[in-house]
Length: 445
Image 1 (tube, rainbow, N blue to C red):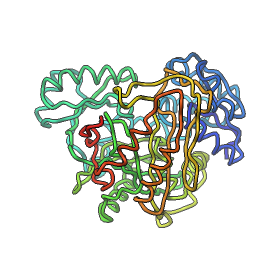
Image 2: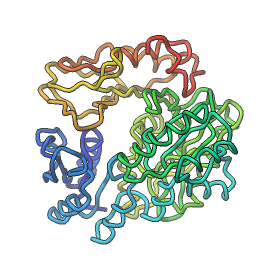
Image 3: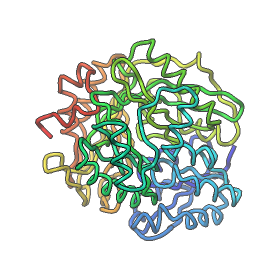
């Protein structure tokens, strides 16, 4: 087991990993930008190193600065969290070069899965159901030709990265031409790679992701699914587990497909296989080679600490459970709390938190890095916390989440707690029939 781990991230996920390290008796090392010098993860870690200016390119995306901090602190491993460098194969290779364990898959596997075009081809050869798509298109003229083969509507999607960035919907050739330039520009800015491909746009579908974990001893376990269909502009808003609209037969097939995907790639660590489900058939969408933002709902229904097992597997330990041991208990829901005003175009909100009250009670969890007096900076993602609840039934979980959202008090900035409450009150959410496009149809948006 590692004795010291550097966390190459910030915010709530850095704190989540630091807490796991403390419970495992592992020393933690934080890195921070100049803007984050007063952040909670800096004070909670055993050591902390400034790695650059506020802009992410000069700090949290600065590979050499992070490696330097790891070497200076004599950290044996680096945990990337999610976002930033978590799916960067170059960074994983750099860790290996300097003899630092990367808590995630190896660089080759990560590179294959981060390249969406290559990932789709690998899964197609493995027999997984695939959404009709093109190879990478290098210009508008080629995109127009490929679009004619696939048919509209379609998505222009970044080859690299994730998080809903570098994606544009095209319903016709005019939207395709405009969207191509926007998507390539956004992809280049977010991931340093402007490569995009086209994918058939499936409407009224659910976005289902299967949580997997694999060790270096040949063991692969699927920890059930999460329904991540509550999305706004390809960004997840609310996630839950399990999905009430999956039959036992489809769930079993998705588990089998997920395990097959892990075996064919030789994947090691925690990851997610993502599918689109139209109520009848399901299709492979992508593989995320990292911990997901919404991992707490899986932890709630399985009782398995994903971060701890992620660390254990990276250190060479064998999984302490098998597929037959995985039983989902009850229901869990997660609401992302963002510093934004949902009623003025989701305008980001920055400033000092004057008053903070965090909800309590049995099976209520708030993963956050904010505290009373904390100043939210304009340089980073707007998500400031994740409110998670667990209950015996889905109806009880919905009521528990609504109660927790009512109890959450964050004064001094705008946030989206009320917006989440309104979503939970919609007939689509209550019935579980909601799909990835339903938020765009609500009058309150």
